[in-house]
Length: 266
Image (cartoon, rainbow, N blue to C red; front, side, top):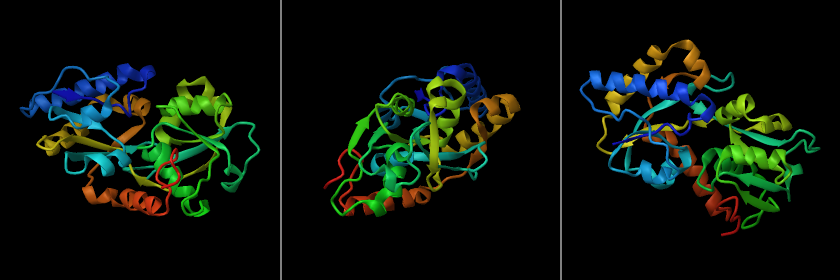
């Protein structure tokens, strides 16, 4: 049985994440559902998300619509405690170096873009949607795409001058501003439109409804200070159709010939 909370799991607050998971486990066992004592922390998230042994994890909107629909069940969306996010939504911050002169999207044409993964809604899909009107059919916008493997690595790439721009999900950026010194060396140019937030998922035959109630109960149990650390104010119901907008924009970009940030031409 597998459980992970990779989108919440900053090493600096791992103890709080573990306490949150322990409270979820207690609430599940009170409902007669077994759960692993510890979270799985392994790099191959796609393998976890597609495992028949998955009890709970959190994915991103783009992998959900591209790879996971029909293979997992949605449990909930997270309501993050950031002032410009509606419950169950999130956005990305478009970041530049603190001393960068650019002031508009058009100013970014030909620049180097860092991104965590081509399959990431926050790190790639949201930015691709934002710049799509500026991209010639079948053409490119950025001069170079720099895959980094993680949002924090993208922040560091921009801060250190190895890239000029990156899109970072708002929650990760807020965590980075707390914990990552390099985050003080970047600035936010703008934020992308709100989209349905990072979905909590279980296996196709997983106990989605009991999980929803166990997570809500656990959030009450851990208290306001732990919720502040994790930037969570609650959870909201989510349906498969809520993510149709992400899939539609992905298809629109592909039809335009802008398949991924690193492969702009079809």
